[in-house]
Image (cartoon, rainbow, N blue to C red):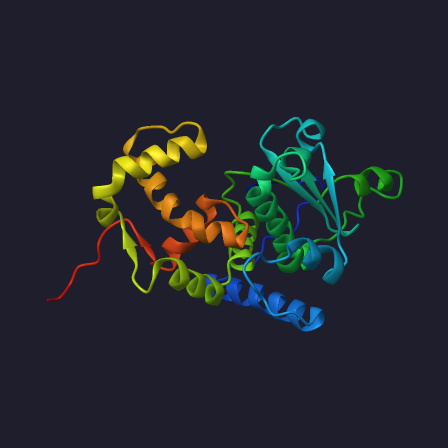
Length: 252
């Protein structure tokens, strides 16, 4: 997601290795599980984490019109403890948006968990403009940003929604112990692509899109359990080396 900061620019975050971002997400999940008294399971309840555990308000809003950008999916007002999700992701209107909704909400939770300490209100403008400043979000988020805060929030969202232990257990349940490579899917490529075209209503036939479609097809049964998109789960499984674009070389 790309961030367009509309209040005073928060300080840049310090570098966090992926392992540390995952640890942050795991701490939040552990604290939530302890408070709720329920064990963690696929389909992480991010609404409850945001609203019940963290005390944030989550609102469906017409953010794309408000900011004049059709790519805006979410925003967060740190001083007001409020998250806005664009109404295009309303799962009541379109169940197929469930994965994108969950990822966007988890992304905004990531901003709150990782970056709220960076926010400092701009006091140089005096009280005359205080009301207007309060109305502006700290971050407006959309796809494509390379800003450190957005990369960190994206990674946090993936770890929050798809915790390593739960993903590994689900993979074993659905696909067994071994990783799956693109090469192993080639004999079934035509059948898989036909299924993906039917599922999506269309598919670009360039090589990269075909490869992604093959991997997303394998990721989808796991993604459904976690209530995320097949694309998000594909990238998570690749990071865990459970989906591989190239076969690993063997010594013998």
